[in-house]
Image 1: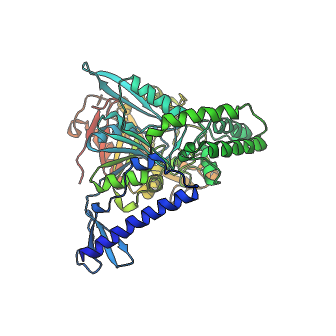
Image 2: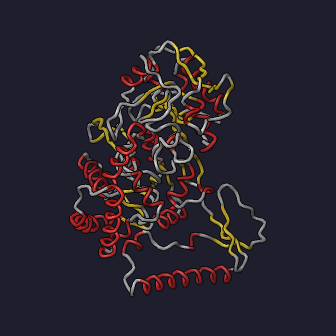
Image 3: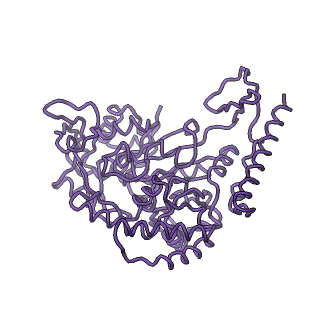
Length: 508
């Protein structure tokens, strides 16, 4: 039986070599890009073979793939080691801090969607004097804060190369060395300056109905990707082909938006130089990640934006342009769903959002101002003041249904410290009747009546609390109410800005 397995592996290797030869022939005998070797070959020695009639059934720690020629099972004998951290509201929930904490237990931190429109702020002690330093991440995985973690920017991310290097240089200047531990997928789509110009022009076209984008060019880049007219990272390494495609794309934008100020030829030369600096960072991320998982490496996936900004399930059209759900983890990294061991939703103890669109629990009063000022609700990427309101459990129930969170991280609970009472949105009503779920129609959403439950506040500081048991009783009742309503346990509780201000709560 072993010979059959070896034969399968040998044929797979022959097929891979034949595929490479075919690729070379199609490129006129050109050399295979050197970055492809950086991820390594997909080593079948990481697997073992079992007959398809074997009585060893798949378990939570093993997975089988059927091989038609010999009707064998290719079984992966490693523990599932992928955890996904996802925003559960409209973003800005504080995902970065949990990613920072969990990064101490993983080998790889990967981004799967979005671009430099995301913003994660992490405060950690740096240097021999443990000086608290604030690091702002926009495009790079924030798990890089841990010096032992490798960062991967997946194929689902859109990358503005100048911003990539600007962020990298800033982090390095702050003392964060990312040498030889940061990689970009060769399949990731590229954001160019003309995308950012077009982003602004589209907002002007929309006028009073503008989405309120960050104008980072994210939407136009994903539009180009969907219309199959975008450029990907691997295109940079064939300069003549890249230049021809780039000129054609820019001409198309001129026809659509009129002739805006943009030096096409200078940009082509700029990217010729940038491509050489970028080359050491580029890998086939699919092969790299699967090799790492097969070797028992632990992967942490850092979501960008949040569920309510998802292109399908968010408050469309006031959303981002990518999939921000657990499904986006799979498509944005090339990971099958069965390998995701745990999904953690990050939810703020109140609700915030940036940009336009209905916001049922928004508080345009002293409560909203309290959240803004005490919670320092200003965007990491844009600096915009965030809209604020009470925690909306209708939104959270919708979020839980779609992402199936195993547990939650409740953040910024300390911002509620001074309030005499705390309200929680639990129902949306239209004409006195409760809606069964979160409505797709924004005209309906804009006119719902919100039903609240009022809970007593705790009116004492929890900023120095280090265990769940130490929290005030009313604070614990607030947490318990959320858990009972959503039927999802809260595993982490944020009580301050620093890394040390996160309480780990035991869950069953």
